[in-house]
Length: 98
Length: 98
Picture (spheres, rainbow over the protein chains, first blue to last red):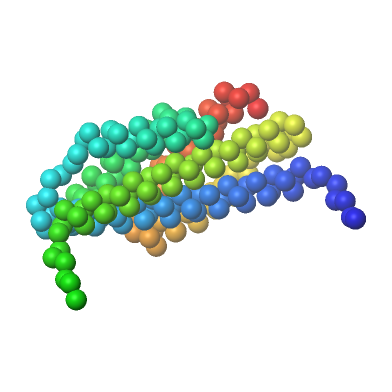
């Protein structure tokens, strides 16, 4: 059996590669999410559907914060990201005039 | 063949469900990313490895902005998200005293 010696620089490069892959995944999920909100915007404009359900949204955010905490992710950070996402949704709706 | 009539409210509910699922995915990817940066922090502290490679990071961000644009996602928004992620990484490193 050949035993390789442990090289922390190689391990670091491996970790960074994994982080970069997560970032690409993050961008793809965000893009997919905005594609869906675009469809929601079109649907609402076409059929004059009710705009928002704040109670449902608050419940959803609590659910996400719970998942974050379980995964050792700061729930305040998650709330910040989703505030930014919501602001971007509003901006997109203005830009595309849904 | 039974043809169901199109109900925009049902379609809206379906889209919202897909958005919620994307959000859960987003939180999971973020949590996984921070788990990896925690490992990077530990490794750097233990082996006194070089802290950052700004040129590599800038190139990586350009790559992500390119993916965003292809997917109709505002690259400025992506930059903002990654600025927030980087700030959180610094905060985590302080909290956990890597």
